[in-house]
Length: 310
Image (cartoon, rainbow, N blue to C red):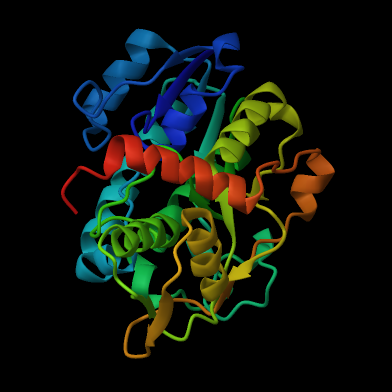
């Protein structure tokens, strides 16, 4: 099977390419210079030349709360343009199978947890990442529309919970919660600091899955594509408080300092736990426990990321 993987240089894409079973496929993972997803003509020309059997759309502009709050328009436009270009061009090229990567940010901020796939568009979004979420929702709906309109077209969306792991971004501007915690606690330990700051009271809960597990789910999705639901969450089925994540990272890094809370900082949604009923029925579950995932992420950070500017 010939697969076009967008976002091959990102965390999800690199973990997919690192999966032990990826050699079963012929995977094309062009860089943004080789294939500019913001240019619809370039996308159409690439698909016409290489004719993949299946597309995995994992590309996107991503970032933490600070980045999303600073430039919501950019997150909306870039993610919307990339998504609609690849999905629409794939449909025009006659590519019958596509796997789109959504985000748990697509769910309403006040939705009852666990978050079920039918809840999308049932309420207001979390303001701190609304632009990103709107783009993800629009692209997932586009996949549904094409699937409904054509019997030859099957475009499906996987909605992962929060992801962390090898190949993650640890920069202060772009990092999400877990890599940010790893960077902060390593910095405190390396510099003999006795305190680490937590935004908010730390009671908000998050579900974080190791990126290698998401890569495994994607490999299985390619191999068992016809059994995939139209939209399906990918997650753990349980979550932890932000305070607990700080404590887990401190344990792995052997940090003995204390944590202090800045109650004036934004914290986002109080909870984001995805329901995994469909995932269980489909027959897949994550395998990497939190301590192991943190250790593997920290080893990657020390080897490849620590020396880079924040």
